[in-house]
Length: 268
View 1 (cartoon, rainbow, N blue to C red):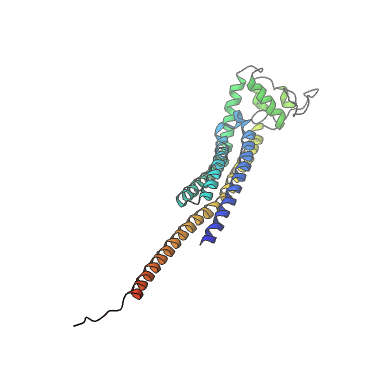
View 2 (cartoon, rainbow, N blue to C red):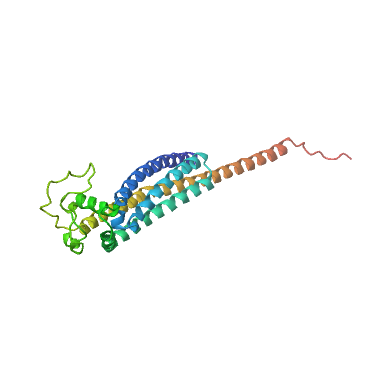
């Protein structure tokens, strides 16, 4: 049993190292996906980002739990190991819930984005073109080579189409340079393009949460098998101590009988 518990101990220690490494990878992946969604939060809505935010938080918490699991595995205290295993169970359940949540968002994202973009478009059209909201629309037009929500006809109420609908506008270094004229307008709207963009990244969030929950669930079995091995080793130790004690008492009684004086008959 001692060898078995030692093997499980090193398996749990190895798992906690991999657990921490997976947390670092998950932190990077979820942070990147959250950034890709965050830069278009005015168009897609904040609720689309929530699964990525939860996944990022779980990556940070997982690092702490891996440290706790490492310390408890080295201490070989059964109750502490069980508590560490319970924390891993909670992490896996929350990550799987994040996967389910992301899939629900993925399924309803089309309605949410079209509603958010339409409301934001109407809000922007009421402000001056020098506002920060108009700059966001210009960058969106140039980035996706689109115009408005469903096309350039969305600007018929304002009487003019922004230059960004043909590639001109407040561009940064990663976007294509200014064009000399505006003879050709982008005919496709930004709604469907941004819907595909957000749907793809939310699906990546869901897959990251699912993969993390499946891989990290292996630590649950290792942790609880280690706790079981420690309990069995303790029981074996108790049985062995009891057997030695009983054998010692039996040997002591036999020695007393062997050294007792021979009975003598009374003399009359």
